[in-house]
Image 1 (cartoon, rainbow, N blue to C red):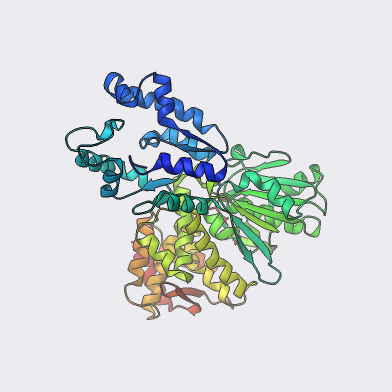
Image 2 (cartoon, protein in one colour):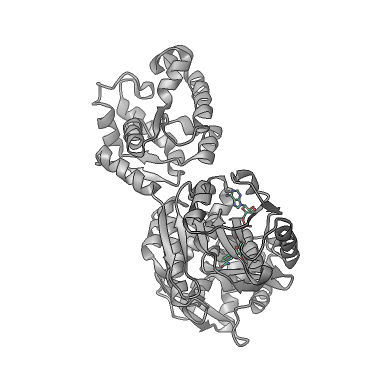
Length: 505
Ligand code: NAD
């Protein structure tokens, strides 16, 4: 965070409460340079300061179980940022410009260890610095506004961000726990032990996630991507299970995105007539959607998820730190399901996104998960209300198929959300303006809401092969307003085609 926000003071107090060592980057830089920060700036220049800072960052980022206060510009360097985000949680502290100025000292009385604010008009310099770094600070998933808060409160709020949350699923036949928290994946062996989940184990992951896995015994690495979500891959999994000595007392652990969860879960559902499995989702989409509800499966050449089983995991372990290595486009894709869950059952979650909430932090993930759990508990085996989760997916699946899977799942869902809300307005089900609001929220997080060039008739045909058509008729889940969705709606074909034409023009 910016100068004066309280990084050192809060960091020290947090370290004391957590019983961890505390480190501050600035004194370490001074130590390397053999002179004070203002002297480094005045005698060696800012470039040399930044070089030393990167050296210190590389050292600090490799340490475990510590609390670190970093200089406010340290993470402008993408290598420094990647090093910290790979190993730990970055919390960005914010405060209003007035409060920052107050905290660093009254105008004319600035402490002399803040060279970036030195000069005749520190307020102006601070504002310029905040302006220049706004995009950086905004981009951190975990933000804490410290304005008007005593340090003890700031530290308590960080502590509660760090505390793992347990979200139970109570539905009969689907009973299990979701544990959600920063750094949980590293403690996976303990989490399993504590719950009596013992026995021979294999870990299933894909080639993109494998490099980040710490506990690597019995690791099965699959090729990444939806094109590998096939029965052929399941066959290779059975062979690997046998090779690793997995028996009926065994546990399959999936660490990866929705593709890995769906496949490892399906292989676990069918291997030796069903073994236990644990799902550790590592994409936003998998955390807020694919890992929840017990559905597993693979694709057939005719369509997605055409073969599968309900086989709930014994435990879901969601660690938002894993999202730090996720490509930006995949995070954006996951936001489609967060937005969908807001529309289905949490207006506040949707409104926070409209107001510009950053994505992928633990609160947002928890709220999105809670919506899906509520729906799944009400209808564990998709007899009714669970069809609401299909919001955006009927047209979305059509778009995915018609585009030859050019769009990521979440991107296609966003196009589906926008189109289906137009349909809902056209049918007089939704309040006027809803479609525009939903499209704006999607666009704001970087999701597409139309697919120019695709053939609307081709999308319609692809929708017909959607497995969710009931009795030969296509049924939609459609939004009535933010927080309320209806399902089982048959749409007028002419109106549907009109919407698809608008979406593809
Ligand atoms: P994915 O599993 O293909 O992951 C997306 C990409 O991100 C892959 O390239 C993967 O290797 C990579 N990746 C994953 N975690 C990473 C990390 N932490 N760092 C770096 N790279 C990482 O796709 P997805 O979007 O997670 O899931 C989509 C799948 O989920 C689809 O097959 C869909 O059908 C399924 N799904 C299932 C359910 C269900 O109820 N079972 C619900 C929704 C979606």
